[in-house]
Length: 540
Ligand code: ADP
Image 1 (cartoon, helix red, strand yellow):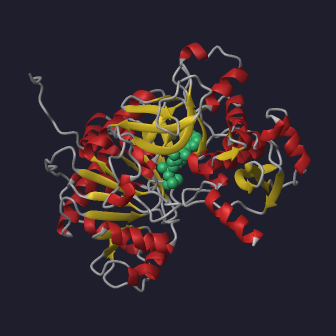
Image 2 (spheres, rainbow, N blue to C red):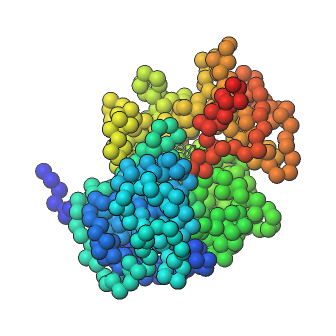
Image 3 (cartoon, rainbow, N blue to C red):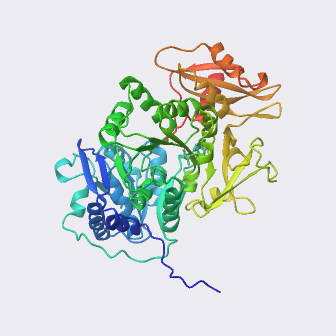
């Protein structure tokens, strides 16, 4: 027997309509490419989204069409998120840090109809134009006064598309499974792979964020997504903030520590979200200023493991650190590590140790860890295994890529994350490695993340990575690669001594190599693939 409640499809456009009616004065503040600060509200934004949606229809965009963006975090990018998905089309966010080759691949693979581009990134499009689909239209995200000179033909201006359009719209109905967003992973091996989010998965993910991080996502808080709108929907914030009534502060292209500190201070940002490297830059600024940005109480750290030294530095200053784990293929949130009240009484050291874990799963994401043969491993906090997930916000296959999709699901239909992790009895996830970065020495696993975590606590280390090098006797041995901080290069022996306090002798790196800068992926993580390649080339 079926229940007798109404079935209303979950739709993204309803989030902004809700915000406009319920939190009309909730703010969106943006640092613009035009050079100034722009302020608007959810009420005003919902009107402009309606205008943009009319404009998109006039451009010939139909349900299912892909509309691409190449842009910073700002209100126009936010408007595109809603207008595109609102009319049933698919918002394809492109990471401007991808290589030319990757960008050409994904625009053609996605078969984008229109590309909305920030002035800053127009030169990229000019360069790639001959390799992009012939009928791709280009719209520059600015007003007439700021339209730049360009070698491209037929370029349109964003504000012209909105101009004179009605500020109301009847959002069309479609099934909640309708595709709404497309995001390609940086593709460290092979071509980039597209994750296709649906209306339903996006709304459920927004609910999930609000339920899981309620002290941050609530009416009146001011949140700064440092994580880009071009990277997994800025971790879902553009949807969760309007749902919860939180305001959004968009930093545009002003991403250095000083600009970030200034913006957070002026705008009284309560919570900011980003990858660990950003928080190191902010901490440097905090130390130089001798104070915190006014109003800051909380940071959300994800994308790669948050080192203990980072968590400590912020928590010591009274800032709550929420360590989170996820993947593009998971929309992205999988776990988060705000501590429950009964753990708030732990000693400072114990709390920090807990917060180093990736935390507990969110409702709707199931997790299992298995051995090489696929047998389930116990949740005892010490047995690491291959981590698999399933759930309403987890991908069921890559966009138009059956070959890549085949290899990432097990016989029970669970998604292979590629992470190695343990889960403890209280449900806390502890990621120890990527399976492709794992170091297997004499048949035993050595966690590169654990080693890196300790090395990062040395004051003269700016960044580091531990990778496997082949060894005739032990199969593989760990090698430590270090980028020194601005002041002084640490002595190799000091780093090894630091590690020896926590690790057995056989787990210690045999060698330490210093580099000027570690290679980064398009999402700002250390690229161990590139490091391994460089090392192999050096050895030749
Ligand atoms: P990409 O960087 O390739 O575009 P993602 O951002 O989806 O893709 O990367 C997801 C991966 O990042 C995870 O599988 C995991 O290895 C790593 N990761 C994300 N958050 C954390 C975290 N808090 N701790 C450790 N690893 C993390």
